[in-house]
Image (cartoon, rainbow, N blue to C red):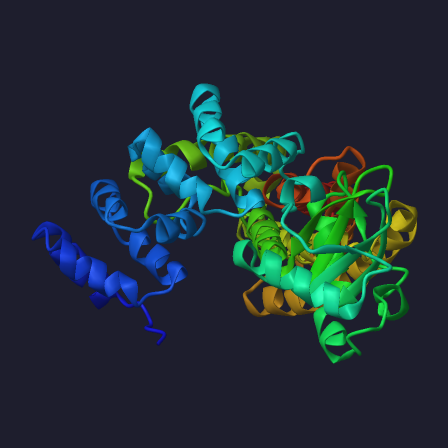
Length: 452
């Protein structure tokens, strides 16, 4: 039975830990899902978490390690005795075991590899050679593979043999005598087929597959586009080497979403709200320092026009509006663009068309917002000429916002840098400087021409 974990449950576990009621804790944990136990860990401090972790079975501990964040996982790994660590890792599927072992010091990793099952150790070592963010790094070696000449009954028997050491068996993979992938067969079709029919007659002979070097984002797009439950992974000779399951892809999608979200806010993706102040400070301060530099860059533009502002104080009231609206428009553009890049909806060959479109949208938005700003400025006591000034400056800055909001992510993508990191700094800097420069520059020209 599923039990929703609330703060009262976490407080209950804290009290039981403090009273060292180990049997009561074990009894409560027995009825919980691993992800719910992971949520309990989020509410515990490091000392409590390590005490709690010691009470878990090896199976539960192996699942919980995959549910907690990276910082807490490292703390828990450090708290384990070598033999206990081997027991925990031995309960994991190959891809998860590889993820954990890759985080260990070299000597400790070797000790764990020597301690787990020999076949599992070989499988994990194969996975460790692939970068973490590729199909090879995300795949697991546990799978069901049968030859094309096998019958449906033999295929079902192979599933029975492998089921004890595998989860999420949704497809069986069909290979030739050299181990090369020649087809995929969904289990539902296998079960409904005649026991004597050959696998080659009922399989999908043109399966969707990826090679080990394909980026994890592309893998996630394939799962989303074709509604896949599992995906075969092959090497450069088309030999079947592993599979990726939908639960791993869900983790990838969540990771990519939060990574982009954090980058756009100028935050390290590893930070959590429960982190101690010193860790949060270390994560946030560098970006704020960079932001401080760009803010002074924008302020230096204002300083150039200090004489203009002295002649007409109303300019100081209105200029943040122009810069702020540009920043908002730039954020809109970059959010849509980064999403499209992440989903593969946009390629570099589309750059010119996208830039023209965003500049056009910026111009049209500038017309609409500029009229509204001019009317409001007039109601606040500004003259018609000042209204015209803010109208023109708003158009110019929203064009800048559209161009920079599209150009900077495309440029970063071309340079193979995550485009999400541009939102917090580069685009805002462009719109701040552009807004101040357009508004105060035009005001200076108007004053010199005697309009103000």
